[in-house]
Length: 155
Image 1 (spheres, rainbow, N blue to C red):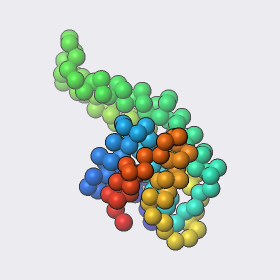
Image 2 (image 1 turned 90 degrees about the vertical axis):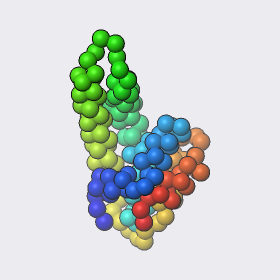
Image 3 (image 1 turned 90 degrees about the horizontal axis):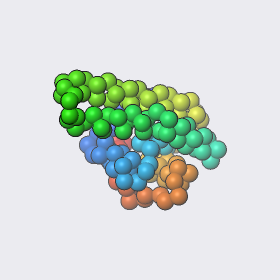
C-alpha cells in the first residue's frame, strides 16, 4: 500500500470525498487530514492504540491551531475582491497562501504517518478508523457524516 500522502491525494480526488471532508471540517469541526489518516490506518491493516490516536489528534490540533487555520482564514479572505487591491495581485497572493496551506497539511500527514504502527493484520473498514479517531478528536462524533465519507472513499 502507498504512503499516506499518496493515498490521501488519490482518495481526495475520488467522487464526493473532497466535499465530505470539507463538510466534516466546516460543519462538524473535524480535521480532514486526521480523518484521512484514520481511514488510511484502517484500510492498510494498522491498529493504532488509543495513545497513538490521541498523539495524532494532538499533532493535528497543533497544526490546525498554529498553521492551517490561520492560513485558511487568510486564503478565504483573499477569495473576494478587496477595495484598492488589484484583483490579479490578490489572486496571486491567494494562490501562494493556498500552496502554503496544502504544504502544511502535507507536513501534518508526514507526522501522522510516522505515528502509525506498521500493518499488523487484515484491512478494516474505513469507518472503523474514522469513528475511533473522531471519538478522541471531539465530544460529538458526527456518525452520519463519517459514514458518508467512508462510503465515498475508494476501496
